Length: 80
Image (cartoon, rainbow, N blue to C red; front, side):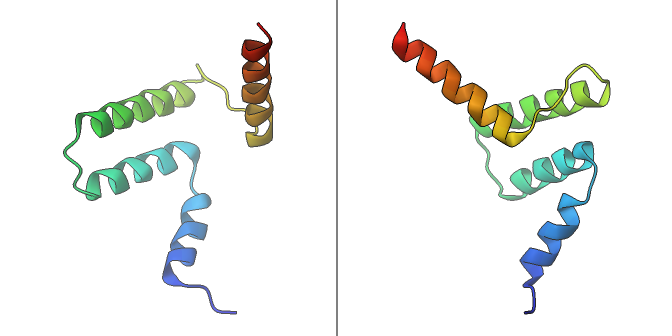
């Protein structure tokens, strides 16, 4: 089976370091030519988080763990 160019690019991008993926994501968002204050705010937040991660001030957690934590928080709110 032959991969599409998009699949090849995605596979290559996923091999990048976290900070490089964040920078790539920012560039891709900007390339959509969105001149939106909300988008700019999200880009700034993504940069802030990537920088904090690079400085060792923020840790990451596994996706499944993040989903489990979010579900637990929602369940606690509903129970309260």
